[in-house]
Amino acid sequence: MKKLLLLIIFISLNVFSQNINLDSSFGTNGISVLDRINTVGSTMELQTDDKILISGFIESTSTTFIARLNIDGSLDTSFGTNGYFEISGESLFLNPINILSDNKVLVGLNSPDKIVKLNSNGTLDTSFGTNGETDLSSLTSDFRSILVESDNSILAIGYNHIIKLLPNGTIDTSYGTNGKLDTPISNSIYSDDNNILSIIANTGGSGLYKLIKKDANGNLITAFGTNGEVDITDLDNEDSGFGLFIDNNGKIIVIASRETQLRVTRYLANGQIDSSFAQNGNLINNNNPPRLLDFKSNGNKLIFTGVTNTTQSPLNLYISQYNEDGTIDTSFNTNGFFIENTNTAEEFSDNIYLLNNGNIIVSGAYFNESEKYFVARYNTSTLSVNEINEKINLVYQNPIGNELNIYSQKIIKEITLFDLNGSIVKHFRGNSMDTSFISSGMYFIKILLDDGRIVTRKVIKK
Image (cartoon, rainbow, N blue to C red):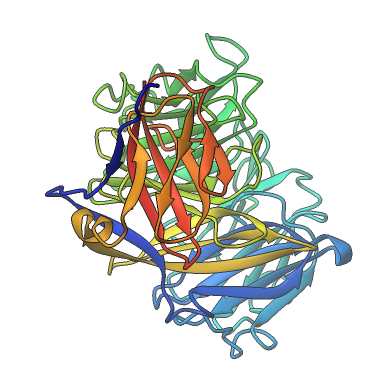
C-alpha cells in the first residue's frame, strides 16, 4: 500500500503580514449596525473630523435617510433627529451625498429629481433653494451625480445633460439653455485637473463604452486620449457593473465586474493605458472572481472591497490589496485578501476608506431575515507569519491529491480554498475537502477554528 507523507507544519518565514481584525473599540465588537431595515443602496463618506455619514433608501416607505456615526461607531444623536435625517424620495445613483468644506451636505434624490442641502447638524439649510431644496424635475428625469465646482456652484449630472446651480441653489440660467446643457455624459467624477470624467455608451469605435473627459461647459479635452475620448474595449454588454475612480497619483481606475470575470484597467492621466500595471494595463481574474464595488489608494497600495463571487454561497464581504504595479500584496492578511465569514448572515461591502493610522472602515449590508446596514472598522496590525503559524500544529498531506484532510488539536469548523488571485475555489464545512476537481498548482487554504482563530496555509495540488 502506498504510504502518504504527513507533515507537521512549522512555518518559518522571514516575512511580515498585516493581520486584519475587527477593531473592538468601534461600535459593538468592531461593527455598528443601523436600525433602518429593508434598505437598498448605500453610500459612506467621511467628514474632515472623521465622523461617518451613511445614506440609504428604505423601499417600504420610499424614504431616503442620512445617518451620522461618531468616531467610535456610536450614533451621533446631535445630527438630525436622534442621529438621522429622513426625507421622502428615492436615491438611485452611486454617490448621492457630497460633503462640503464646512461639513454641510448636499444630497441628490430621484422621484422627484432634486438636491437637498443640510447644515452640519443634519437640519435643512433653508438658505438653499426653496426651504433647503431645489427641484430639478422640470429639467431632468434621470439625475445621476453631483459635482461641486471650485466656486461652490453645483453641477447636477444627468444622462446626456448637465444642470448648473448657483451656490445658493438657484438654477444658473446663463448656463446652456436656461440652466441645462445637453451633452453626452453619464455618472461622472472629477479628474485630477478638475475636469469631468465619465463612461458613456460608444456609438462607434471598438468597444460598447468609452471614457471621455470634458470641461464644465461640455467641451471635450482634446489632449485626453483621441480628441477627448478613449475606447474601452474590455467592457461589453455582459458586464454587470463598472466603477470609475481616480487614485492618489491621478491615474484612472476602471473596474468591470461580472460573475465570470473581473477586470481592472488603469489609465494614465492623458488617457493612455498604463502598461506598467499588471498585464499591459489590465488586471484580469477569470476564476470565480469577487465583485469589486469600491476602491481607494494609499501611498503605493491599491485596496478594493466588494463581495465574493455571486454564484457561490454564502456571500461574504471581500477586501483585497494590490501593489502599485498590479501584483497582489501578499503581506496584506498573509495572502493579499480578507474575507469576513464570521457572521452567519450573508454580507457585502460597497464602500471603503483608509484612515491615517492604517485602519480600514467599510460599510455595506448583511442579509438574514431582513437587510440591514452596517459599518465596520478593522485594525491592520503587522504580525510575523512565523509567530502566527507556530501557535497551531496542523497535520495534512502536501502536495495534496484528490482529497485534503487536516488534523489539529483544535476543532476545525470550515476550510476555504483560494487560488493565487484571492478568488474562492471551494468552501467546505469540517476538516476534509474534495480536491479532485482542481487543477495542479499552488493554492491557499484558510482554516477557521472553533475558537474563532483563522489559520492560512499554502498547499500544492499534484
